[in-house]
Length: 203
Image (cartoon, rainbow, N blue to C red):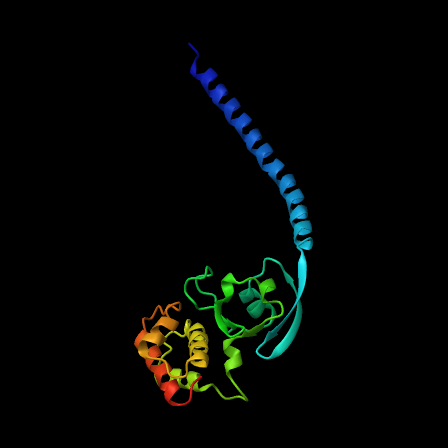
């Protein structure tokens, strides 16, 4: 049977050996991390770019985009059009809605390269000569925005509706806006605002 002195030495040796192993384990990843960092930098530099031409709010843009960029990223981060919101970022809430060739589209689920040769309208494009559109004014008059986060998407979907149907019914308005969620649940005021815009001459 080992005495207490032998047990203490054994524990000391064990702890010493474990400490050396920890130091070694911490040293190896640092070197590996350095190499990984270099490879990551090279990977970023090697990301393929595609040159596209698109018209945004009436202005033509020629830009080089990464093939993985969404249309939301292009609009917000590279063209400075931050009125287009990022909500769920998976094509469910409608906050990022823009008009692509006149039709509502979730820009978070649309690749920027898909917009090549096409026309995009964002909420910034509704304003003309410093004046808000009739639809925007109706939203203001009827307190349609609450927190305002979904408002730009609601406006774009409603704009598309009024461009193809100048006098929609309440049911048609609700159907057109079904893809736009309002977390404040202000749906009735939004529908009233769209109705009011029809009485003043559309979008």
